[in-house]
Amino acid sequence: MIPRLLPFIAALVLAPAAFAGGPTMQFGAAEDVVRAPDLPSAKAKMTMLRLAGFSSVRVTSQWQGTEAAPTDAELAILRNVAGAAQLSAVRVYLAVYPAGSRVTPLTPEARELFATYLTALKQQLPSVKDVIVGNEPNLNRFWLPQFNPDGTDAAAPAYLALLARSYDAVKAVDPAARVWGGALAPRGIDRPGTGRDTHSPVAFLKDMGVAYRAGGRTLPVMDGLTFHPYADTSGQSPDTPHPNSTTIGLADYDRLIRTLGTAFDGSPQAGTTLPILYDEFGVESQIPPGKASTYTGAEPATTKPVDEITQGVYYQRALQLAFCQPNVTGIFFFHSQDEPALASWQSGVYYADGSPKSSLYAVRDALTRARGGSVARCEGLGLDVAATKVRFPTQAELARGFREVRFTCLLDCSWELRVSGVANGDTRARLTGFGLAGAPLRVSLKGRRLGTGQVKFSISLAQPVNPGVPQTRESTTLSLR
Image (tube, rainbow, N blue to C red):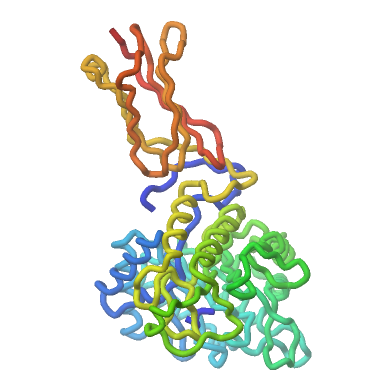
């Protein structure tokens, strides 16, 4: 739906090892407003992203059907994005796709031209390590034809051919780059001749698998799948499942995994273990009268925007769902800032004029809790909390009456501080509390009677919501007099 337009790195162990969700995920925005003609403007928009709590951004570059390389203007804009992202510690995902179904690359020559364009972008933007190929190729708005004259799927095999050629081209330039395929819309009708020829993601992925196996390719075509798990309307909660249809929303993760397994398991292309990136999910909010002059046009009746409080709740729920889905490596909200045309998307946490909505604070809080490992309790996810900047009192400090322990948890933590006798292990003092990821903690024992003799200070840490193995740090032996 594109045209409608970390303060600390967690040091942790995940159980089981294949669990990709949790605080290591990418939390970002699908946001072309950062595509600015100069670096200061791009940096200003990137700063707004960070202030909202996002640490990744997906931007786009449209291939017009004839270019073998981006224009100088396009390249300058993308360099500004890359430069601003590096200054802001933001990870960039670059989505490259044909500019509408009229330029669908159906021939080997057209696919080669697209791959050449992609190669040129990758060569000129070495800091960008994530490339997304295509946008919603299961919709006729972005890919035609969807069906062959006999009613069979034309889009999935043709898109697979483009993805394979793009994968090879990007890897030739940078073997360490990650190539993401799919970028699929969440629904389609799987019926030709309706005037809105579309494929459901279930049918499209299965047909991609059939074409992949029939082609005999021995290399993958993608390192991960991008997907757009929009609800049926903005008024529908993201935890609504679709058990009686081929629609895949955020609550239909299990069906997506089964579909990937059917399509690719047992082939050189990963299926049920394939990383998944939700690179678009949006909830539109109502525009208050005081902001109406900032917008133009009329809202489509089918959108059903919600109030800002509900928008914040729905974004939080989307984070909770994605956080607990093992293959999911990230979720990006579409957008961070509203588009001014009401016919487009008012799904940001900023209004079109750049001022914050009330939902921004709920979203930022949820993102903070997600990075700390506490936004949701997930079955099978165990987080081991490490501590950094640990400082126990020295012998000389104890003699002067200094009895303070300092440390920082790399994830949200529950902590216990103990002072124990060395001779018999008796507990002289015990304090407990909670800390947020990255927040310096200072625990004072001033005024507490610790007795005399040799003692040790120790801190034990555990993640309070998704606990793994408790971690303990201990001081050297100290003497109390």
